[in-house]
Amino acid sequence: MLQHSVLRICQFLLLALCIFASEDFDWTKNERGSFQYGTFPSGFSWGAGSSAYQTEGAWDKDGKGKSIWDVFSHKRGKIHLNDTGDSSCEGYYKIKDDIALMKDMKLNHYLFSISWPRILPSGIKNDYINDKGIEHYNNLINMLLENRITPIVTLYHWDLPQVLEEKYGGWQNSSMVNFFNDFANLCFERFGNRVKYWITFNNPWSVAVEGYETGEHAPGLKMRGTGAYNAAHNIIMAHAKVWHTYDAKWRNKQKGMVGISLSADWGEPVDITNQRDIEAAERYVQFYLGWFATPLFHGDYPQIMKDYIGRKSAQQGLSSSRLPTFSPQEKSYVRGTCDFLGISHFTTRYITQKNFPSNRGSSYFTDRDLAELVDPQWPDPGSEWLYSVPWGFRRLLSFVKTQYGDPVIYVTGNGVSEKMICTELCDDWRMQYLRDYINEMLKAVKDGVNVKGYTAWSLLDKFEWDEGYSERFGLYYVDFGSKNKPRYPKASVQYYKRIISSNGFPNQREIESWKRKALETCTSSNQLLAADPLIRHMEMVTEIVVPTVCTLCILLSAVFIMFLLRTRI
Image (cartoon, rainbow, N blue to C red; front, side):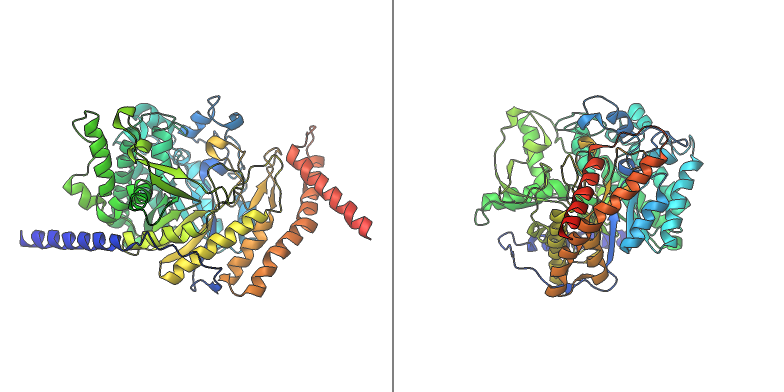
């Protein structure tokens, strides 16, 4: 009894220390200094990422079961131009080719996800284990290690087995906690002797909000005001259970780590001297990042979420809050279940106070009582949601350090897309984005934030969920119109490669040459080199192949450059 009391007192003191630490973040201090030269600590890990549904293709091959995205993308009108991930990059068949690209870039790690229905077609371990799926990921992991590339494996990147959605209601049902734990335990059993970095969920915010609140993503449900909160609650419990399973059963023998990847835009007060704007900005970040991070580090939802959702629920005549609650036992169970925190970050918003009356209906968005704004001067490469605001990245990383007790952080996704009919291989805006965001990460490291690695998002152009193939995040351009889905390096490949080889930004003179050399290579070589494989590919294909618009663009660019070179001679 005495031991139990001492333990509870220690837990209380630890929680109090964490809460005290969370008050250290200074919302009024935003340093937007000049570019900082320097390098990252020795052993800093550089990588690139992908996910199973976005890149693998082979959606119904070798015994794979259907996922909710297989079903959702086949419904007309759900995806831009009715695109699907049925074949995508054909990554399932091109492991060797893609690892060759990674090796050329000298990546230290590759972040990818395992398709739950490729291994367990029904989602349930006791039903059937698909050996072909196990073999595929064994081959991928082994080949990465042979090339000295560390695998970082995500267990859930949105592709829930369709059977579990149909029979149980997916993440609305707490039974997913055990089903997901069985799947994770199987992965630890089969791959854990070689995989030392596990991510349970990638961006659960999108799973909950876009899957069960707005219906923009699979499974496409619009359960406003409740669906997202219920899904998130079950996801948090599922993460905690998997962490405990690994801790109790596998950690001693496999020596790995289990974390989660949380996506978070930064929210900056419109006026840093206005307390209402500061409070609105904090709500924005707490409803985004804190929703998942605070339970895992402190044992409960952010107080600001509990207050706002509870009050609005009461005003709507409900007997209890729409936000689920953790029991005392559950608080202890979920707290401390992160060996590292993955942060996926792309953009920033200005935030100001805006009141939404409770009689206008309930939703996650109106619960926050805030408005999001953007500065029209922020660079906008084409995707309506993604603006380049590098200083927000440093602010977010500093916030994580102060809120959650200086955790080990891996940046699990950072990059920029483009929207073009004909993709330009000379992606100078992506090079600028990488330069500026990675430099802000360097400043954060110099500030004392414990960032251990960076993952460029993404290795390849791929299926971009409800946007189909209209947005491209890849360092490598993929010609989706060609049967073999060939890959071509954008200029950003060379630029990122130089950052990796230098482990940062060594000096001004060297860095200024990187972009110029990358663009020279892109202009004089990449497009010409891209043309030759395309021509050979068209000669090898026996049937008549109509080149895609983008293929023609590349060919025409090559011809034009050759013409210019000849005229100069």
